[in-house]
Image 1 (cartoon, helix red, strand yellow):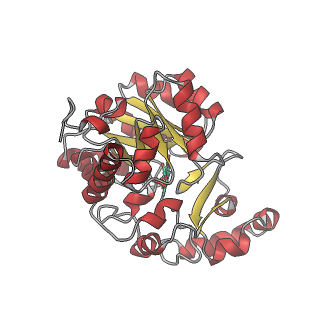
Image 2 (cartoon, protein in one colour):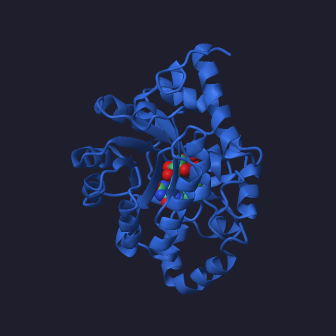
Length: 330
Ligand SMILES: Cc1cc2nc3c(=O)[nH]c(=O)nc-3n(C[C@H](O)[C@H](O)[C@H](O)COP(=O)(O)O)c2cc1C
């Protein structure tokens, strides 16, 4: 197989792989509460860009510990992700990631300033995950190094736009910037499709949930992902309304459509009125009962059929994409 300059094969060499000196054009998405140093290290060591979600109640010491875990296992680059609308609640975590000189910072879900500037001043490359053209405009104006076009297919929090039209518009407008696709990608076929559409790679969350290295993810949640046919997820605001955190109006989350969501989705006024009681119920179910607690997973869960090491997930998707790009009719 022909190798590109950085160890990536020619078909998988993109501006993203060159920027981070990667073998594979894949980032494991920052997933708050669901990803830590163990998963990030496995992905980075295998040739992707590993990341973990830094917006975590365990605080700045936990963030430092995860970075130490990564650095103890690999000398490859990695990223730490932050949820900008929640930054004021856990800003010390962000400061810790900058002080530890994380090579890359991912900012998602609202205007990335002033954190984008702070991250760049600290020497990090900044990857902005956006859900709309307006979000892309803010990220580019702020000096983002990489954009992620995140679609509504994605697991976890996301906007309402579908990934492919958003990706195509962003890649076509900001020709100078590497763009990743996020949402619905867990196969070589899907990766090949977004590369052909102009993406420089993809950010995958759901595909990495069902890995042994995702030690943050309860086994019962992993089982849900494996059992999913991809049609049992729903975009909802139920859990955000219960939590009462300051998410932007246009953001909701894609979760497993469990009994609780089927009962409460769309009953916004009633949820707010009964917030305390509902919060008690979801808190008691957290990490235990997937029919009540939020199980964040995307439509690509339908392509995840077993719990497999992260390196296998990464290499299978990339080798599959490469084969398809060589022989598109196979
Ligand atoms: C369990 C879970 C938690 C997530 N948490 C975050 C987060 O903290 N910050 C963030 O920017 N994106 C988060 N996301 C979204 C991912 O960054 C990414 O956009 C998404 O996983 C891509 O779609 P996919 O799940 O189909 O691969 C989360 C996704 C999942 C599945």
